Length: 200
Image (tube, rainbow, N blue to C red; front, side):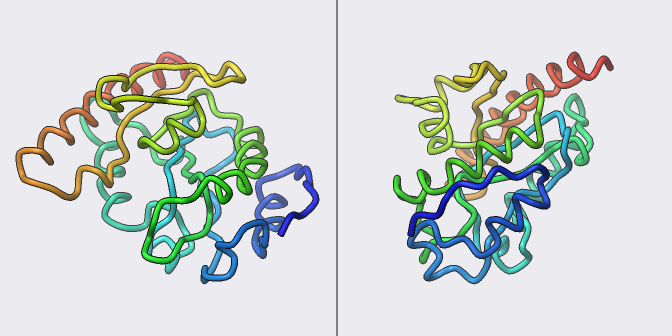
């Protein structure tokens, strides 16, 4: 299923390259490729693991409850980051059966796309949402909760590792409250850096 790499000169061109992608086995079961959403030059690039059912239906990442929670976080006091300043994407652009996590070969097949997407958006900060993106991009190991915070990518870009909002939607009530509090604390730190970089 290998295809030759193609260097795109815009997000629209990159979307065209990947809209009928056959680079991995997910092509056989998906209903559509769900490309990243946002504008070139967005200061924050949010990278999650995979798309979900609602994303596949709408063709837009973070379309379901996790996206609703993310929008509330962005609008919250002491965060207040405009949605236009956020670009949303995933390690892989196709939904797997039963919403399983992507496999190594599937992430590898999407690596060049992700690198080009990041280059074309050219964000000031990469926000890594969840364990698998943390492991894939930064080689993260151990407890995500204990190691949340600031890093640098191999290319030298500032990166903040936090939980995916989806992780705060299920579980016991006290655990959900605690997770949401940690996420909110992380986003306050991200927002402070965003304002400093934006000159606000």
